[in-house]
Image (tube, rainbow, N blue to C red; front, top):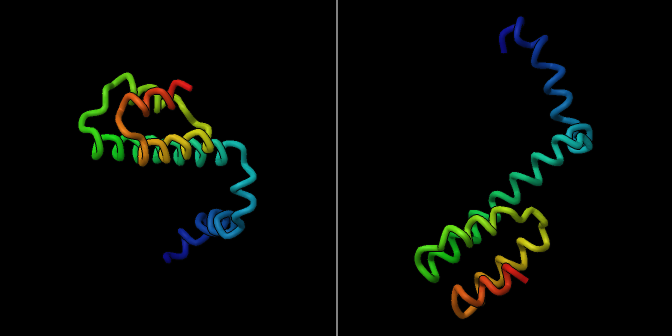
Amino acid sequence: MRPHLALTWKPFELAWDDNEVMIESPLIQEMMAKSAAQRSHKHILRFLARRFGRVPEEVAAAIRTIYEESKLEALLDEAASCSNLDAFRTKLQG
């Protein structure tokens, strides 16, 4: 690393090494939760598309409104085991 960059990098490096400081930040927690939810949305929609073909936009939009981890996990399980898209819709609405 070039000497003049070392001075600006060191505080960031120290903050990065101390994961607790970053994870305790409400903003970081919110960003991490949102990112995880968006990955879950993507996985659920991909699973449904592989099993049943095109996923209607209203179903995709409803999935994208959910950010509660336990509900997203339940929807992923339902996407894996439901008999058809209507059964998934029922679970999504309930």
